[in-house]
Length: 136
Image (tube, rainbow, N blue to C red; front, side, top):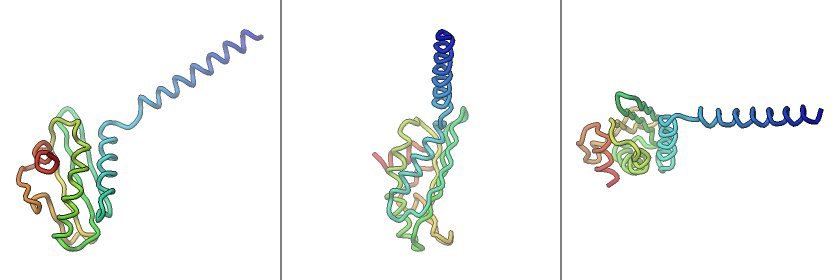
């Protein structure tokens, strides 16, 4: 009987370990982690009301689209907030060698918007160009 309890205990322990390892393996994907990290970075900037980040990482490439909503209806104020949000967000992408990146910030009613061009950026959608302009 004692041997049966020992075997049952060992099996229970083995099942628990397997269950925990399955949880670790099936954790958030790299795209989901990057999305959350970028949203957190954006939301840490004063003047950002919400951040919608779409990250698609696959064999075709890396694609990141961001829509920020600011607290202002003034285009210049929105551009200033965007300028503050870009560096911490782009720092989260440092593990990606390449990809496309698009970002805009909108007023709460979506009537006014500003993009990276309002900050003097004219480098297209290249993630590398965005990082070079706003982070380096």
